[in-house]
Image (cartoon, rainbow, N blue to C red):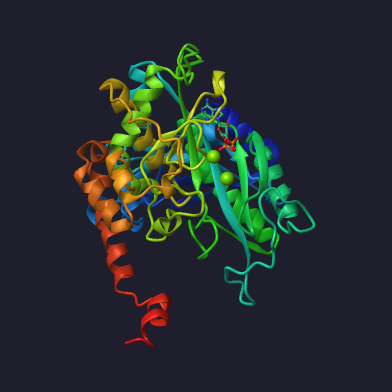
Length: 442
Ligand code: ADP
Ligand code: MG
Ligand code: MG
């Protein structure tokens, strides 16, 4: 491991850390934490910190509410944006029941289980996410808006790119927390940005996504702005995605590459794609968790809405980027940053493994523009649509026993129920579009 308990206690003393946040993520991808003072650190690091699980969405009933926070020493980090006096640090925790069993409602446990499953075949799952977000103004009461006066586009720079300074500060803070930032740039839509960091082993990558979102929001606030990872905050412009780049390594080597293959891909890579395509409908409620997620998955904004893969096209659901060697990877392009990263990576990994273990051949690649194909042609080629709204996605999840198994019965039941409620609430709303469209006609 990176740190021992003694290392952490020493670092807290040396750096003058006064508060330590014990963090975890709930089923819906919300970061939660309990702050302790450094005097409680020894107790916390000895796995003696408890909290009331019944007050966390989707966790447990009142009768079984005691939960233990088990700090993962590897994740200790001092927040760089806090004052030099009285610093704040965090450590990410696993959640255990009082009987010392991991809690099956903890998303980190679901990912750990999938990682251990892959390890049985000697695989390490590496993941590089590409997270997009918007920077908006707040109103006079400090509430977030969807307003921006910025009009820059893809790869533009200052002074048109008003978010440039904010983004640079984000990059520096992330680097202070150990991120290796590969690129950062203005995205296609006004006020939209992307910061890419280097791929890591899946658990580290999922932790990084949570840390990334917290950092981006914190630094934006310091600059008087509001950062949002809402998938489609505005009609008519691109939404925010979180492309997931994936590869499997064995004995330190990327096993997705095979130089003698026409596309440079191994059998395992093709089967991994086959597994993703087989399960993608059942996974969509996890990769695209909100009513709003499905407003991003529409034609015209580089987001996928058909189930297809390609090594030449940039816009299909699954893309094989051109780089080979250690960078040979499969890129899944439907996920958005509202997804719970632990659950998202768990279902991606297991779907891919299912492909490898059962030798699931992918369909033929689709190198033409799917958006220009007629319904007859799509049907002839067997190209299906992704679920078109949250309800359809949840129904697909209900049908996919394999994906439900990956999530475990606790999470799949609670998740399905919560997402149906979310849909029902939405469905009752009378939207501005309807009033504009129908009121004067009928
Ligand atoms: P693109 O523009 O092609 O969509 P980017 O260059 O923006 O992709 O992002 C590439 C992401 O893929 C980075 O996070 C990078 O670290 C990651 N990546 C590179 N090699 C691998 C690999 N072998 N496995 C997983 N992710 C990888
Ligand atoms: Mg992008
Ligand atoms: Mg990409």
